[in-house]
Length: 314
Image (cartoon, rainbow, N blue to C red; front, side):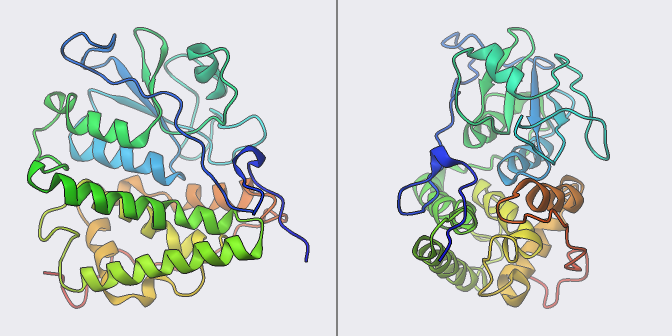
């Protein structure tokens, strides 16, 4: 049986499992001078792809914390070629207004000329020092919710201290088994690696279906960061992961609680504005030539995330 060629050969094991690279830039923003990056309005800029679930989460937290004036954002072309993420004029994306970069790789090279890894989004850029501060979505979300939060609207924290350990544990499970799980399935280059990833993914979804049948959100009636971590995968699932990544045991619409939960989050003020299904589908179906050689982008599925939630979630 012929095996699929890996999307990223340097991140593939001999057994065909996708092993995601570590984030390269993990400097924090601080009030106490321990880093060269103080919390200042207008100083930082966020580079994202609307297609990417990791970048999407940072956009959501930026919006929820009211940081859109204090921290600018630019969107790359969802179609990525062998030169990486690009700043091109098009629907929902455009040139880089900060440094005039043509490609996001230029930001990586400006920060570390010796960088040889894969260029990823999101990127938090320091306009004063002309360098990347951080390219970890986990760190960026915590910065927006923490040291940069006073620049925003004062909304409650997404990391409640009283559930720190339980929250961190669930967030890690969601990352390993669902967020990255769909990629382990889609980027697998062997049957065994693919089946292992899919079984683990749907086992996790089944457990969350049961949990959310008893609770409106992951931790009761309040929304925490882990909810948005899960949302960013769920909202892409039926459009791309189910078909393109062969995660096709079930769709999210086939899960009563997960589908209601997805619609509940999607319908919160401002969230739908962060979701762009055109960018999402064009990125996955056009960029991943080894998985979809034709480059044809499917018209469907028809999603109904804005309709009334029935029964209402409590």
